[in-house]
Every structure is written in C-alpha cells, then in structure tokens.
Image (cartoon, rainbow over all chains, first blue to last red):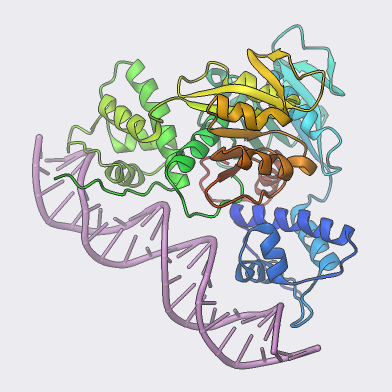
Length: 219
Length: 219
DNA sequence: TCATGTGAACCGGTTCACAGCC
DNA sequence: GGCTGTGAACCGGTTCACATGA
C-alpha cells in the first residue's frame, strides 16, 4: 500500500523549482547528463544545501559522487508542477497590458492556454486579438462554463478590478493573476496572485538606493 | 545628538507599506482622519498585530483608543519609500510588454519617470512611443550618462537578457526590473527584481489546484 | 575523496499576549 | 473597555555539519 506523501510546496520553492527546470532543460540541451547540487545552485542563484533540500523535498534522489540525473530530475519537477491537462485561462481586460499578456503566452506552453479575452469596449468585443476571441465581460459567466475556463488574468484598471474579480468568482474561476494595483477580496477557495508593476519598480528603486544583502528570486 | 536608526525594511514589508499607503490615501479621500490597526489590517489583508508591528518598525506611533493619524502615517510611509528626487528609468526592449510598461508608467507617479527606451529594431529606433524617445541599444551607455538614468526595465527576449543586463551594468544603472524568464548574473551592487509572468501563472495554477492556506500579498 | 541525505541549529519574520494608556 | 506598544514565543524556511555511500 502506497501512502501518498502530502509534500508541501511553498511559493518560494515553486519559484526555485521552476528555475531549476529551466536550467536543467538548457543543461540537457548541451548534452550533459548529470548535475551536482553546487552546479545547479550556481546557475539558479541558490546554495548547494538549498538545492539538495529542495530535491529531497520533492522526493527525488541522486547519488553521491555522481550527482543528480538531469533528465530524471527535470521529469520529476514536471510531474509536480505541470497540470494533468492544459489549464484554460481567460484574459480580463484587453488594454496594453492585456495585449502584452496575450502576446507573452501565445503558444508559449502546451500547459497553459488563453482561450478567451473579455473587455467592455465595443472596439474590442467581437474581434480576434493575437488569435484569441474577445467577448463582452457580461458574457464571462456563459463562456466560462462553455469553455471550461479555470483561471483569470485581471488586467483592468484598478477601480473596476474588485467587481471584475467578483464576476470571475461567480463564473467559477479557481484562481486569479491580478495586475491591478488593488487588493482583491475573494472567497478563500479562489487563489489570488498579485503582480504589481508599480510596487516592483518601487522595490528596485528602494533596494538600489539602500543596499540589501538579500537574495532575490522572483518578485 | 541624533542617532539615525538603521531600520531594516524587508521586501515583504515594503509591499505591505505600499498597500497601506494606497489604502490610507483612499481612507483620507473619504474624509476619515483616524484608523485602527484592525481596520487597516482588514483592508490590506494583514493581521492587526502585523500592522502594529510595521507601524512600530517605521517609527510611527498612534494612540490607544484613538488609533493612528491617517495623514501622519501616510506621510511617514512616503518619507520612507519615496525617493528624494524623481527616479529616472530606461526601458530596455520595446515589444508588446515594453509598450505595456510605457503605458502603465506614463504619468502615473511623479517619483518615477521612464525617460528613454532602447531597442534594436530600426522600426522603433528614432520614434517616440508613448511620449518616450526610442534609441538603439548601442546608445545606452551614452544616454545613461547624459540623462542620468538610475534604473532599467528589461523587457527583451530571454536569450538576450543577460547581455542587455551586462550592458546596463556597464552603463552604470543601479537596479533592474527584469521581465525576462532568465536568471541575471550581475555585480552585487546592482539590485535585480524579477517578474516572471510564466512563473506567476504557474503559481496561480498550482495553488488553485492544490489548496493553500497561505496569505498572499504581492507576487 | 567528494557529493548526497538529513537531523539539528539557526534566523528572520509573524503572531501572541499582556502591560500601559486614553 | 478597547486600543496601542512590545518582549517573548512561535513557525517555516534556510543553512550547517556530519554520517553515509560511490
């Protein structure tokens, strides 16, 4: 009988795993087969101990004196991070930022697809932008069910972000990537991830001014 | 004799302070003068204890039974976070994402100004986009000195991100906001802040799938 | 000998809990 | 009574250091 361990992945760790994966892919493309924790650590900006701890945590194992099998480790990370079937994403708000998001994700990964965009402007509704059809925000509910949409990317102006978020929750979306500079109040089962460009720039400026001896990974 | 305390602001705390500031401004706009830690906490998604600790850390003080003076607290946060003079920023890479960044920051804050953009495409070089002149990346060094540029926003494709970052460091920029999915290796005096849209979406997807009882603030 | 696996120590940040004050 | 200010406890995440194994 197999006991499925409830391994806990923290956001920070997820970021590192993602970085490891990227670097492992590059490593393998260079026809290297095995990798040591200190090598992967140097590339990813982490300590060897950190790498070993992460690898241990996800239940992968290397061998002393020969390091980790790059392919196997890559695969294990994939099993852990990649969804079982492609995630279907809605873009909410087709301004400049929204378009950049469309461009950024179009065809980038087989695991994530933006399948619909929503806006209120009659110039956009009905058009196809970057290969994605744009609907009126009123249609979110209907389209979300029809197209089995899982997640939403909020790229609308801050003042309407909360109302759009509520609409998204009502439509049954399970997670939101929020670019609007506003704290979203949503039911606890909906996961929100905030990306605030203004705050990010503020951080760079602040820590560039005052020194920081702190390691950075992802904003 | 005044001893200037070396108060340490962590990235997480900076994010919270930024959120407090936003909410305080709104609060004041509604003509409310005083605010309790539990009120600010509820708005910002933080515990009252956290708010009190933060306020204490930045050396501001309220009064029992009357809470904090909203205006005073707002001002104190401003003193701490805002640069003494406007920060001059260069945009490196004028693709869709770059344009979104230009749009996002144009006229948003008196404290941060994107003063120049750089690209390699002859279609863009020489043009003025969103009110910002676009130069060839070769001119970064010259323009950085001439225009006293402090920070850079990297919005170029991942394969060239490292070389652009190095160029930026050579040009004397003190901090980088990096949108490229690549770990930048730069001298320690240059602060890098990473914003990786793919990883952010991965995070949303992962934590929407598996539950997380973890508090989120900024990606 | 050199790298992994891992219990234990460590560290920074968060929360508790209560004294002090309006 | 209810809030702030804050030492102390707590907690999760990181690093150390060493036993183990190729």
